[in-house]
Image (cartoon, rainbow, N blue to C red):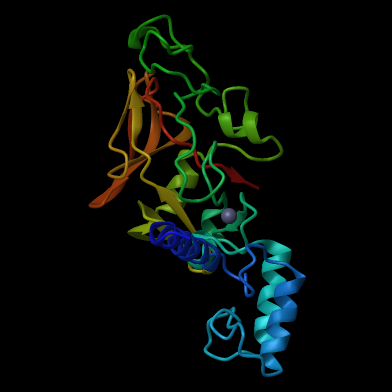
Amino acid sequence: MKPSRLFFFFAFMAFSLSLSAQKKGDVNLDKEVDISDVVAVINSIAGSTTYKTTADVNGDNTIDISDVVAIINIIANGSPDEAVVAGLCPDVHHPHIIDMGEAGKWSCCNVGASAPWEYGGYYAWGETEEKTTYNWGSYIHCDGSSSTCHNLGSDIAGTQYDVAHVKWGGKWRMPSFDQIKLLLNCTKEWTNVNGINGRKFTAPNGGSIFLPAAGNRWADGTYDVGRYGNYWSSTQYPDFSYSAYYHGFGSGGGSLNGYYRSYGHSVRPVTE
Ligand SMILES: [Zn+2]
């Protein structure tokens, strides 16, 4: 091989190794987490030094039977993601039902998301599909202006206007004003998961959920991503037919207030 080709060969090997080393539980660095890794851990316990850097699967600085258990858990449940590492979820099979005690049972992720830190979809209040343009002209529950909003009832939870109910089925639904109010009684923290900013709620029973700061959609744009979160409730704002209650937050705190129904906001479902 020419020296230059040799360089690329080693660069490629180093790159491949760094990729495979990132997969937790891939003890023998073959890019799969499977029974061969269990064997590699057992060989390490028996004295083999071949995989001494990766056989400490649970990171407790010893290679023993607990690493065999850890790797079997990974095979059964998948490699842990940032939500598992952060203590939000038991495994990578989202969405989970998170028991928040007095605040009820919440999903670990948004409608349209497949992990707690993903933004998911943006929905105008009472609509069940995303769209390219969010304004009064495109809002299907009015006749072209904020003064012509249709009355969808005081609470749309569980109805054909509830995107959580329509998309997820079962007993999933949008949270009501009262349910969000109970959530706001939990310990609140502006933090990040997997590099995404958001607000974490921790209940006295230890349950916690993370709401990513997904911003909002208006006209053809998406605004305040990473700076603010805006989450719809199922509850119509009583004094204004063109508004509904939503939970808005940023690094400085949050509130439960009314906002224009035609904006695209996030939805975090609850269940019974
Ligand atoms: Zn989860």
